[in-house]
Every structure is written in structure tokens, then in C-alpha cells.
Length: 254
Ligand code: NAD
Image (tube, rainbow, N blue to C red):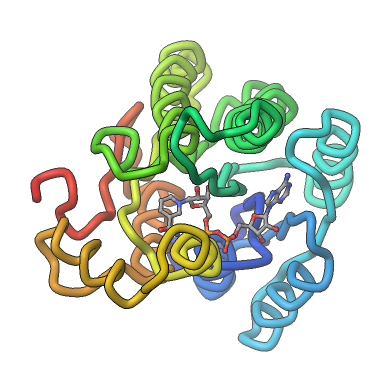
């Protein structure tokens, strides 16, 4: 097993990519901490891991809330004694032309997608520094590097996550902590379905348009991103530091 006994926190793992990654990590021998705002969804992920013979617990916490996140990290340390991998996956979408976006909506997407990486990292990193080991995976997006209509606020957050990843890597390399970013393309999850519904009268036509922007003939699946996260979480990627890992069917080259 590629993650035997590693203690791994995945934020936003009640759905989509986070859930798929949690299920895969459970099968690879990790002790998985499933975090989400949505308790029912998070518990379903835990149930899926346990049914496959893996080990997992659910902790409800808002990744933007320092009190809730520090309590979650404390609970993990008391139970497992360490945190080997932090996957900062939780995120929300932001849709609209810039001149139409309400300032509150702008702030919300910045808060969840950027502060929601900062806060869990802030509380997990001291434990990794003490262990002198750790792998942090930050969820960016290929949209950090290519334009997509009506996605300015969201793209801004994912560009920020990429910049943050590189700075984190420089600062924490002396503690043997690796920090890398995942840049998925279009992955069919509830998140994307929500975006398509809000943005297009004809989602099928929109899907055809998205396919045209990539080299692969298929859109991505959550499992595709989970496999890339597995590589970054495992010791197989020990020489991969501060890297953007594209999982996008070739969007950046399309
Ligand atoms: P999803 O909506 O299926 O899952 C996101 C999960 O995060 C949900 O369960 C939600 O409850 C949780 N969450 C939201 N806010 C939270 C908070 N404040 N605290 C804790 N949990 C919170 O979405 P997904 O498509 O699986 O996306 C996961 C990540 O991947 C996001 O960061 C997204 O930006 C990124 N991403 C997705 C795609 C894609 O095409 N699906 C592409 C590139 C990047």
C-alpha cells in the first residue's frame, strides 16, 4: 500500500474530488480525516472508506474559521499523534462578469478558496515542523493559467493558491515539508454541474465547448485527480517540490 499508516487530512472531502481522494487514500492504507462543512456528506465518505476496510473519522469544521480548524487539528493530534499529509481541497465556485459581481460574493470566494488554504496550513504546519516531515497539497486549477469566460473571481483565487504554494515551499523546505499544487481542468463533480447550470442555458452545449478547449476527448473524473493527489501524498514524489501538477486533459496546451 502506498500510504500505509499515513495520517491524512483532506478538507472538503464530503463531495467530488475530495471524496474520491479520501476513498482512494483509505484503500491505500491511510488513516483519513474527512473534513467538510456538510456533516451528512462527510459521514457518507467515512462510511465508504470503512466499507472498503479502511480507517477514517469525520470532523466538521469551516476551513476559514481559525477556532474550528485549530480544534480539528488538536483532535487529530490527540487521536493519531501526527499529521503526515494535508490536502487543502475545499473550495467554492465564483461565476460572473467582473462588473456584475457583488463585493460580498467576491469576498466569499476569496475567503473560502484562499483563506481556506491559509488557515488549515497555519495550524497543521507547526506539527509537521516538529515531525520534520510532511506533504501539503494545495488545490489550484488550470484556470490559474488560462482564461475561461465569467470566472474572474474564481481564477484570481486559484492563481493566488499557486503563488502561495511556491512561497510555502521555500519557507518550509528546511523542515522537510513538501508543498505542491494540483491544477485540474474540467472534472465532472457537483461543483461543475452547479457552474454549468448557473452559467449556461444549454449545459450540453457548454460541455461540448469545454471539450473543445482540451486535448483529451473526455472531461476529467474525480478519480483522475485523486490518482495525482496520491502521487503527491506518497513518498514516491519525494523530489517533487513547489510544483504545479496539471490534471487537465491538456487544457493549457489546447
Ligand atoms: P465539490 O463542491 O464537489 O466539493 C467541495 C466540498 O468542499 C463540498 O463538500 C463542500 O461542502 C466543501 N466546502 C466548501 N466550503 C467549505 C468550507 N468553508 N469548509 C469546509 N468544507 C467546505 O467540488 P469539487 O469539484 O470536488 O472541487 C474540489 C476542489 O477542486 C475545489 O477547490 C475546486 O475549486 C477545485 N477544482 C475543481 C475543478 C472541477 O472541475 N471540479 C477543477 C479545478 C479545481
